[in-house]
Image 1 (spheres, rainbow, N blue to C red):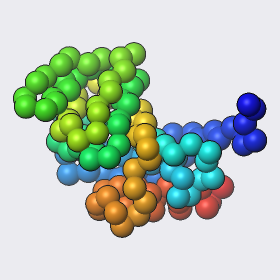
Image 2 (cartoon, rainbow, N blue to C red):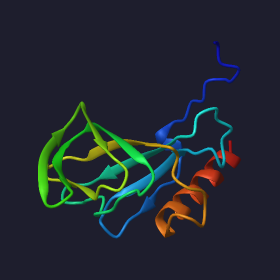
Image 3 (cartoon, rainbow, N blue to C red):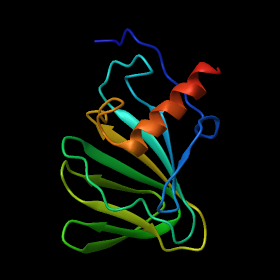
Length: 143
């Protein structure tokens, strides 16, 4: 059955990012709270300078698909399992699994993260996600 919606195009560079205490920058690209979408998913762009990380965290109700666009690092999951990740790899972090990516390379690392279902709306997930959503809404309102 054909979709009744339209394609949504987002330029990662156009959205304002939020700097984290772990040295990374996070940008909310898509979320159903500010873009009308047929799917219940959200997308984040994460930039990690050398030595920076995403910080150990989990998503109790959301699976996270993590595509490594560029760079090289270590993915720490669960009980101290570590896996080398690099450009063109896809990682699936199931709901509830602790995970953290650390840029171990000498160049910027970029991640595209897709959450299914979407991360909860503002005020329900924590300060960083709330800040990312507010910055993204501001970016979309300026267009």
